[in-house]
Amino acid sequence: MNASSQQDPIWDVVVVGGGPSGATAATDLAKAGRNVAMIDRAGRIKPCGGAIPPRAIRDFAIPPSQIVARITSARMVAPSRIGVDMPIDDGYVGMVDREHFDEWLRERAAQTGVTRITGTFEEFSRDADGMARLHYRAKGEEHLSSLRARMVIGADGAISNLARAAMPGSKRPPFVFAYHEIVRAPAQGNAHYDSRRCDVIYQGRVSPDFYGWVFPHGETASIGTGSAHKGFSLKDAVARLRSDTGLESAETIRREGAPIPMKPLKKWDNGRDVILAGDAAGVVAPASGEGIYYAMLCGRLAGEAVDRALATGDARALVSARKRFMADHGRVFWVLGLLQWIWYRNDKRREQFVAICKDPDVQKLTWDSYMNKALVRGKFMAHVRVFFNDIGHLLGVART
Image (cartoon, rainbow, N blue to C red):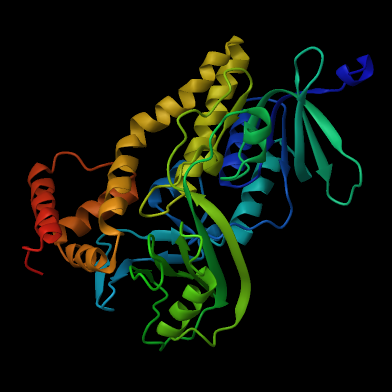
């Protein structure tokens, strides 16, 4: 590396990826006074139901203009096609359209002082002085450009190119592959569709190990599914789902697919100057597949860890992001992973699982935990009743 290249400007932080996690980290760091660049590919939209709980709206100052629908209930649909409605007693779940929401997050980052770079990360290297250098191909450019950075945040998805390049030996998180189709929402009167209800379909024909969904997005709707089974056709499953819900003739606006991680990685940083966030760190909730809130929280924690490492000169501060995340949410992820392992295995188990959702205690605990992003404490007897009801269904002795 020649001397002139080592005299290139040095960024405090370069963020690779401008989704909810990367954009949140970049915004927070810029607000903290750090010199931040964010590299993001143009036009990439992740398949996502788009649900965000009230906790996310509060914690990350998401304005009403980004909420395209307000959901007041969910319907769990069993293999037998029996549906169990789970109304939200107080409040709503906000829905966003990732095509517009992610761009809004990136633009908010730019307004706080983040330098946006539209391009694709290609290579990671180190200069002779040990400084990290990120090589990227800007949109429309033939040759690579590069940036020098004191700290790097990798928020570039479940199959992170930055993790592979900058953290040799790091493992990919286990994931399901998700696919959805965005369609024009039907007019009121469709017996299978409610613009204020999310439908979650637990049927082996829709997914052998996950679930399918129909989520309203205001003028549009997301119809999708996911699976870790490589031989299972997600497109065929979505076609069946569209037929079952009377949406086969709805105008298709776009189609998207991507891997969705199902377990947080055991290590998020390289102990020096690189930390992963969002899907790259594996922070999507098992069973539910919920990722937006956890991605934004992970980005915030990664940003705070990076800011602390820069302020102290001690890279050991980077480990605090994962420690803090798992302290608050590790138990929830463990419970959800166990739930998925037990109840998503076959249609008999799925039928039992949907039957459990009739229980008012299950419904209240589910919504309380989801809306506030914490296991509900102080309701010991409710948890006991739910536990024994679950065991009864598993053994086939519970009444439905």
